[in-house]
Length: 364
Image (cartoon, rainbow, N blue to C red; front, side, top):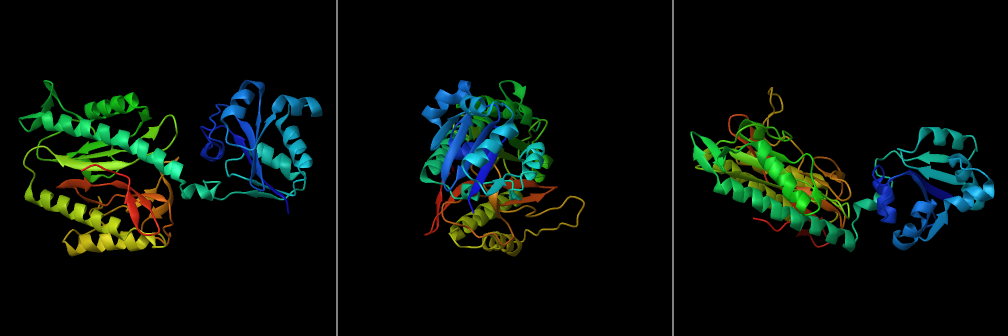
């Protein structure tokens, strides 16, 4: 059966379209693939740029097609393409426009909507070029992480609060500084986390208010490169001043747990092997997890996730059955969280290989 994979979208909403074409378009276009040949239908505004930039086999003129069928209607254009290429089956992403989908059903051609948010599962396996782009994003992110830590180091404590430049240092001011420095390097991260004190005990709390000495400060930065679209993800936890002994022990335990988890990363290893070993190590070290409390405490999230054109992609590095595969890029980010102490999380971005792993993060 001759099958067409069909996308009708723009590259802001469809990262599968960006993945397949490497061509950014602000308005919906028709993209289709037949037996590994890629086609892109573009209007006059985008046609010449598409020929030069899009990584497809054929760029078709929307105006030429519309003229030949005497219609500008998207459904008529898709019908024309189905007939021209003698298509017997059509596969579409789960975000495909429902109106177009319902109209295509009337043609009695079998339609197969994807059940996964990712239309092209091949996105999980990163090509060498993609790994280089992720590494590029990571290097820039590390520069910004250093700037934030340096600002915390340079701050002065007064009445338990940290001051920088004569003003109280807050999560908001550090986050604003972080975003500004990321933007200067061509990166964006609208939701970066800089959380201290009790907020650090909540893994996804972005952090608000003044930062105090002797308390953990969790900094989770996960920006996207505005040019190439690829993400990086790094988390570090620091403390300005003399940290309580229990907090020091917790930090060292998380660091050891992360190193243990990374050492286990290898193609064909189940993700739960990594996650469960870290979880058990924390338990054996006296840091117990309790989901029954009003505010759950301990190791209360998964170990990591895949990343690429999206910040969260398959696989999940958790207690599930996902199998790690060669050239996936994942995070390893264990953490411990207790309301009275705060939270500690340490995260690196890791390339899975047949022999083991390569750490794409080069930051202390």
